[in-house]
Image (tube, rainbow, N blue to C red):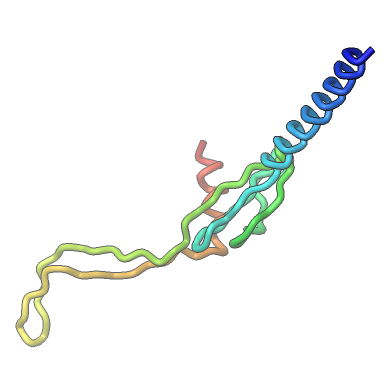
Length: 117
């Protein structure tokens, strides 16, 4: 009599654990995080690349229907080696410039890349 109760209790615990495992897996696949200095563009299987971009933070997607592509939009320095003269006759060897991606054009870049495939 006691072993029958133990078996039913363990099967109930196993069912609850299985439900929590499946639910946790679905929740994990429906959440994505965009770090600071990054931008996410969503691709929808029915509508293609969406115009809206997602900024920093945690966001929800529909797991099979949508996919998030994350772009780095931080300002990055670029060093160019070039021997150049200035007005006061000094020679400059390195030129440094900082450039930043335009966050509102991230979806356009993904659409262009998608169309070239």
